[in-house]
Figure 1 (cartoon, one colour):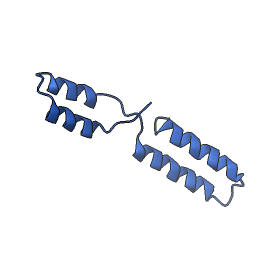
Figure 2 (tube, helix red, strand yellow):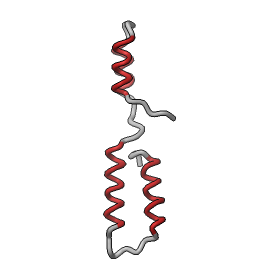
Figure 3 (tube, rainbow, N blue to C red):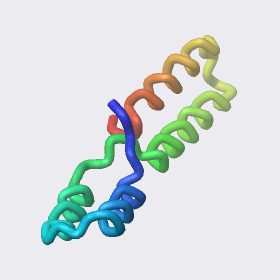
Amino acid sequence: MRLIDADVFEKFIRKNCTDSLVDLWCELVRRQPTSYDVDKVVKQLEELRKECEDPLQDYDPNYFIVKAIEIVKAGGNS
């Protein structure tokens, strides 16, 4: 899978296409689900950091690495 910047793609379409369907194409792109939500990933990682800083917990550091990898791979869609 390859991520694209939908805003850049829309600008490209509007600049380079003279087709009467330009607005339809742009609307179709805008309606696609977000495959990677950076804000959600950061929020989940911040929550994981809080859990890591809990002095009452005694976790193996690998636990947090594995959890962080899972969060990043899910892209905020978990």
